[in-house]
Image (cartoon, rainbow, N blue to C red):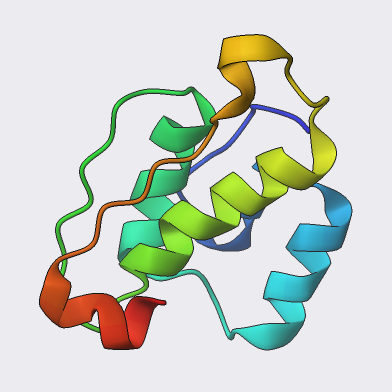
Length: 97
């Protein structure tokens, strides 16, 4: 995984494993604005708040980065084993989960 990302079109996907990048490219026409702006910060492990309208790709922005890390990074030991914490508003649970 490379951390070199830019915020134009599909080049933001270069931060992901090739398998994840290929899946996204085959499944969606292009990254949304929250994805394009959110992934560079997430890749740098910066605390990130993504605020955007419903249906804009916020959940996929967070989960795709998390899934990429979980699948293609070494498994940590001990207390570092919890690597993802997702908080969702109760009204969104029916859609997000």
